[in-house]
Image (cartoon, rainbow, N blue to C red; front, side, top):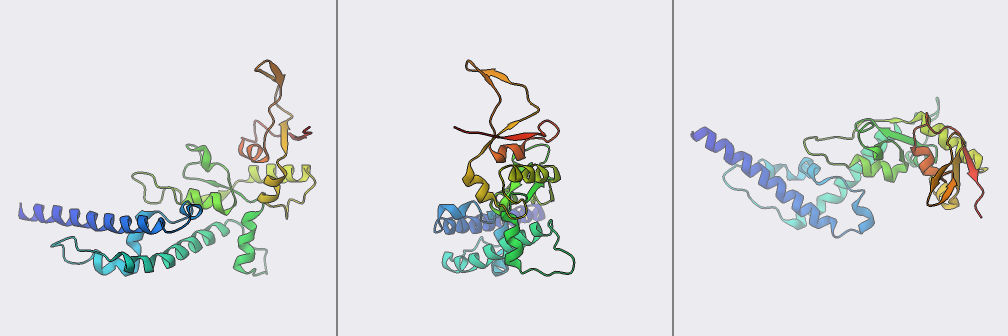
Length: 234
């Protein structure tokens, strides 16, 4: 019984220490701009920060405490390291041309291209948001997902060849170069496209085809919609 009680005490104290660290991290996030919040590493990972080892591994006679000021000094490097590692993992999906060694920042800009579309294999068939991820920001938001029971639920990705082909076609359709056109440029144009394979439908007393944004075109399954045409907007 003594051993059982001691084990339960240690488990409780471990949990309380991790909760304290996550709570301090959450307070630290409030000091950043709201725009940054959705691109920060999830709180469950702060336990891996080396500077917290002594606190986590202290004798399990009490929970102990952690100075918020000390913890806050560790978070910027933790965030930068996590972000950099996630970017490197993503860039591995887009191999460099043989014989060339591009600087990291140059390679990172590749993720801004309209034709750089990846899919999360962990939720490819369960969550539509994981089907087409455009640009580093959307990839980062997805990579930091936290699902109960899973430590790293969204850690495997691959280039979505069908979506890449669709994006290249749409970019060419509006007169841009698929090798250089960026997500920002396509969004700024705000074009609308219609599917050449779909039948006209009735809706609210009007019969016609649905007009899609370029992101919607890239996101729909290619075996259903394979021919998109630029819609001449008034």
